[in-house]
Image 1 (cartoon, helix red, strand yellow):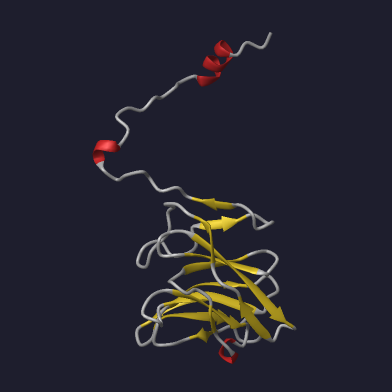
Image 2 (image 1 turned 30 degrees about the vertical axis):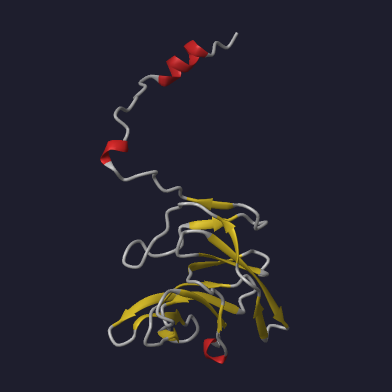
Length: 182
């Protein structure tokens, strides 16, 4: 699965068939941008963000038959979804940079239900925006309890930049001097 920029329809999600003649086929193709797609751990659901509501929001569709249903997950904007390894929770970034989590429930792989988004992590963390580095800039631990994120700099003001840098040459010798082995 990948994203392709198409002049007539914007950014669309496509899939590359690996059986028979290999070709790219549309997966989600609308008049809006669809990007940052993630397939659920069980391979039955596709989460992505789209600007079809007028702002980026998170949506889920069945996979691989993406046209057989669609559910909006986020309620106040969202981008870069990420499935918990259990497949029972979906995470995404809110417009203010917070990480939100939504409990999801699937019944027999045919129906999908999402809970109410809940803020899990607040803070100023680096997140790509439209037109910059595409893709997800955070990850979750296998147990779904910890997040790896890139902390934003306190300020981009030149006056707050470090005024010096310390370079230690021959640091093994310095370490031996400071921490004797006997």
